[in-house]
Length: 79
Image 1 (cartoon, rainbow, N blue to C red):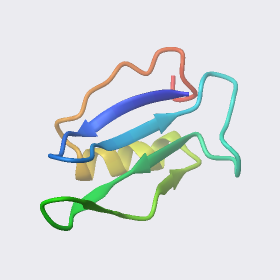
Image 2: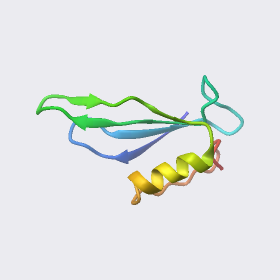
Image 3: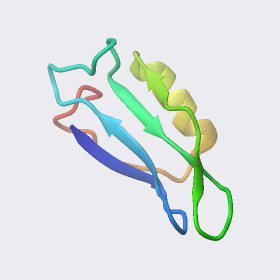
């Protein structure tokens, strides 16, 4: 599994998990995004995971919510 940091928060980072080339996650997903929202000074509130089965839907989500994110997906299921 490959892990990319989408946004660095104070306590918890928003993270993109991508399956290796030729593999998928349980449920048929190729990518999972784990996001957090500020709750208070000591903790962040996790949001429900965003799961993606297609590269097209993942790219649309990344362009809309993380326009500054750029990564090299060579060797992953996205390449």
